[in-house]
Length: 387
Image (cartoon, rainbow, N blue to C red; front, side, top):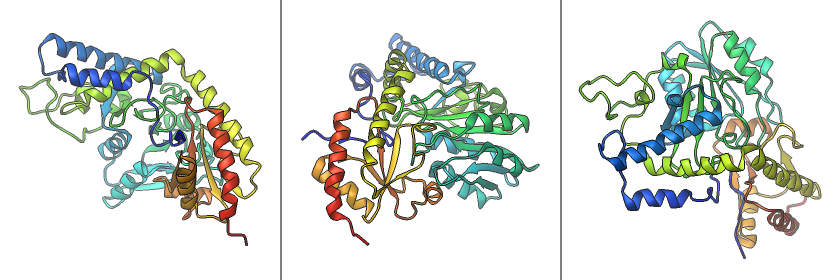
């Protein structure tokens, strides 16, 4: 039986065509280092890195490709924002739908004199933009929030919140782990100062590469967490003050960037809109199918509006971990079960501590795979503990 992959919220599989091929080509034909090697092959790789920045700048509507900074991933990026900006006495606002990539750094910083408030979502994971303004104090420095929930797929109102931040001169940071490459993210329209992205989810690239896009205003005050060699201004012990070198110390993950370049080329050809339409058609088909099982609770937005292709299910009368185990062992269906590194979101959604089973679809999934999954749900009824 072919294995069915519904864990695209963790990592997309398969990657876009040619991702692995291009990465292997770099590693087998010459893993040249940019900003160091002064020879033609290194310059050719540097050109691809520049093109990747330009593709990301276009995707996120950034003014200049130099604003695009590469990091090992989105968690690294979020830490660079929070720990590079906030100082004792500062206050920040976030939401109850955040991943631990935001909550754990904030918890650490709280011990160092940073304070934060949490805008509470409703039982579907919805956040109201108007709930942010009453929490703003004179010490408030920034707002940081996820664009789409990694637990249930609910989309948060970043455009409205961004306008509030601009009005009060607050820095606005957005975690696009579940939205980049999936739905439009317009940095200018949403007044975003720090847009954190990862390459291995909706962008269909490899793991280990991500980054952020930074506004000119934030760049003036953000302190780089990492210092070291950049291949530029090597005569000085001071870090370069210009972008992107200011935030890119050390040897870059060039295989990862090359792979991301291939993925972005594919996305530009297929278009984000077309792939999103396919994913939402699959999501609609899945949501219609689970209505036949009254003992399965759908977590989050009940319909297609205001969501991405991430669906969380709570199997009433069953251990959700056992459900995931049975789906994988009996039907070769791969999901993600548990608290999804987002305990506050699960508390908001009413699925703490039991967690939920998450199904996240890509444009490479099919209706036939969903039919197999729905049929598997019928067999799970025998395991239920009836009250």
